[in-house]
Length: 441
Image 1 (cartoon, rainbow, N blue to C red):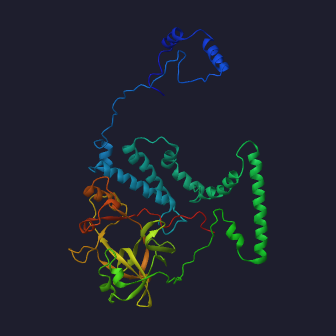
Image 2 (cartoon, rainbow, N blue to C red):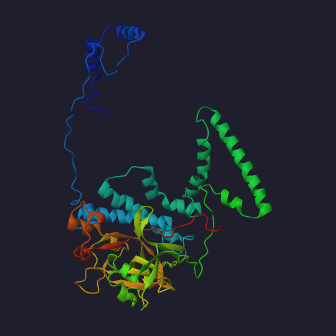
Image 3 (cartoon, rainbow, N blue to C red):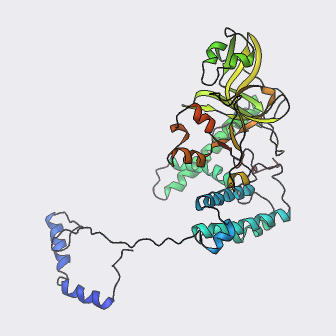
C-alpha cells in the first residue's frame, strides 16, 4: 500500500472526470502509436510529462520502553536488555535441543510427565519471553508450538512424527529427475515417470549383479547422495596411519606457544618426531549416549582454513580437563608414540546473572604456569586419555567490552596481554548426539 492512494471516492471521481481525456481518446492514441511502430512508455502520462518520484515524510517510530514494563520486571528483574535478549535465545536453543533429543542418554522414550513439562516450557517461552521482547507472534508455527505440542506428542505415539528429513531425502531423486526434463507442459510427468522406470531397471540389474558377485556394489549406488551407508561400530583400538611430517623437537619448539616443548617431552632438541594433521578415536559422552568415532584436527590448512580442535581429556590424576590441540605426534625418537600436545584451559569465574552459564555453558580461560608467562601452559595427552571433541566459542561480551562491538577473534592482535585476558565459553547447545529417525533399524 502507498500512502495517499486512498481517499473519498466522490472527490477522486470528480477529479478524474475533469482531468480525463474524452472516452476512447487514450485507447485511439495508443492504437495509433502501435500501428506506427512507436514504442509505448508506461512511465509517461498521456500528455508526455515524466512521472518523478517524491520523498515521503515518515513519522519517527514509536519504540515502547520494554525494560520498565511490569512483565519485563517480572521475568528478568533488573537484567539489562541485551542480556535479556541473550537469555531468550538461550531458552530457545535449549527448547529446540529438548525437542530434537540433543545430547541425551535416551532419545527413544519420553514419559507423559516429561511431555507435559516440555509443552509447558514451550508455551511459557512463546507467551511470556518472546512476547515481552518481540511482541505477539501471530504465526502458525508459534501457535502450534505454544498450544498443540502436548497433543501432538500424546497422539502421535512417537517422537519422530514431525521429522521431515527422510521426506526431504526421498525428494532428492525426484528433483534430479525433474532436472533432466524440459520443465515445460504436461510432458514433465511423463518424462519423470520414464526416468523412474529407467532407474528402477538399472537398480534391478545391479541387484542381480550383486547377487552373483556379492561385492556390495548395489549398496554403494543405491544411496541418494552417493554416500556409503556403513554402520560404525566403535572398537577398542583404531587403525592409525603414521604418515606425517617429520621434524625435530627444536623445529617444533619454534611454533607459536611451543617454546617449552623440549622440557615437556624431556628430549633433546635434535630428537626427531613425526606429526600428523588429525587422529581418530572412540569418544565418550558424559550424558551416556553411545560412543562414536570422532576425528580431531591440528592443521594449518584444512579445506583452506586453519583447524585446531578443542578436546576433553583426563589428566594424570584422573581429572577432566579441556585443551586446544596444537600438535599431534605419532612417533618420537624413531619409536611409535601416539599423543597430542594441547594448550591448557581452566575454569573461569562466571559473569553474574549470565544466561550462558545458567544454560550449562562453561566459561574458560587460558591456564598459565606462571602469571608472567607469555604463552599458556602446554600438556602431553596420550590418545587413550582423550574423551571427546568440544565446541568452544569466544566470550563476545568480554571481547566487545575490551575492543568494541565490531571486534572479532580474527581481528585481535596475538599479544601476551590479550592471551591473559581472553575468555571462552563451551557451547552446551552443540548437538553432538541427536534423536535418530529410525531407532529400531
